[in-house]
Amino acid sequence: MDMESLMAQAAALQNKVADAQEQLAKTMIKGIADGGACIVDMTGKYDLLKITIRPDVLSQGADAVADIVMSAYMDAKRKADATIDRVMGEATAGMPMPN
Image (cartoon, rainbow, N blue to C red):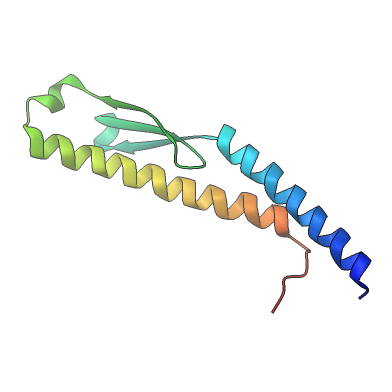
């Protein structure tokens, strides 16, 4: 493979990855805990946008609130991880990766 071809492939990959990252920034992810007692909204780049906590949860004390928020966050993070894997996999599909 000649250097010019290699550089063209690298530029194409860089553009695809940049487009994928832009797509992830616009992708909205919801993490839900305890049947909707807490909902965390974030982007596919892990930017936290909103946390919604059902009022009855607040009366359960700080530790319970912290646990439910953490559970909703972890649900959102798992979904974001899967989305990132899919989107970045599509962006780099077919491109030769260096060894």
